[in-house]
Length: 327
Image (cartoon, rainbow, N blue to C red):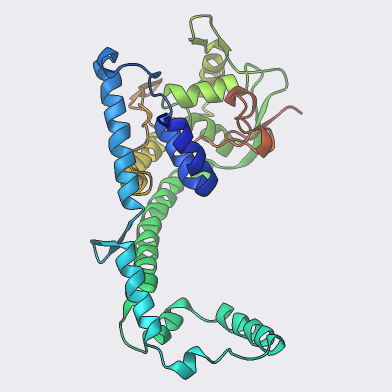
C-alpha cells in the first residue's frame, strides 16, 4: 500500500520538528485532495509554487553559502574532519586519563572554551592558517552578523530621524477615548500613534478594532468602524492628531516597505518560499489620502498566554499595540 503525505509528515515530525513546522506552513491554504485535472488555474499554480518551495527547502538543507557560493554541507564536513584528523596525535590525546581525571579536565576545558572567542578557536583548529574551520564555521557567521548590524543600524537611525520630527509632541498624559468604549483611555500620544500605524491595511485594522472590540463585525464579514471614525474625528478637531503625525505614520510604513525585499529574500532562503504579503490600502485623513502600509502585529502575552496563542486573534491580539486601559 502506498504511503500518504501524512505518513511521511509523521516521520518528519518525529525526526525533525522544525522542518515539520515549516512544511505545515507550506501546506496551509492548499486545496483538498482532488485530481489535479479538476483544479482551477489559481489552485494549480498554488500547488506548483508549494512543490517548488519544498524542492528549494530540501536542497537548502544540504547547502551552505560560503563567499557567495553554495557549498555542499557534506563537503564542508569532510574538510573539517580531514583537518581534525591531521592534528598532532599528542594534541588529540591530551584529554586521555582516568574517568575522574577526564571529568575534571573536561570541566576545566569547558570553562576555558566558554571564555574563548570562536574566531581564536577556529584559528587554533586550523593551525593558525586560513583553513576549513575559519572558512566554514567562523567566517560565514561573522560576515552575516556584520552585514546585519550595518543594515540594522542604518534603518534604526532613519527611524530615529522620523521620531525626531514628532518628538516635541510626545509628552506624558492620558487621552480619553469614550467613543471607543466606556472608560477607555490611551496611555499617551505614543500609544495613540501606534494605533494609527495599524490602520494602513484591512488586516491590521481588523485586528486593532475587533481585537479591542472598538468595532462590530457584520454578517457579511465587513465591520462597522463608526466608533473609531468618531474618535478620530474628535482627535483631528482637537488637534490631538495632526498632519505631522500622519506624515510620520506614512513615512514609517514606507520604511518598512523598503525593508520587505530584504525580509523576503531571507525568508525564501530559510523556508524555500516567500511569505504572504499584506496589501496596503489608502487611508483617508483631513490632510489628504495616504497610500497606507503595514507594521507587525504582535500577540500580547498578557492578554493571551503562550498556551492559548492558537486562540482566535480577536481574543488575544490587543494591548501591546495601543497600551489602552480602563481606569
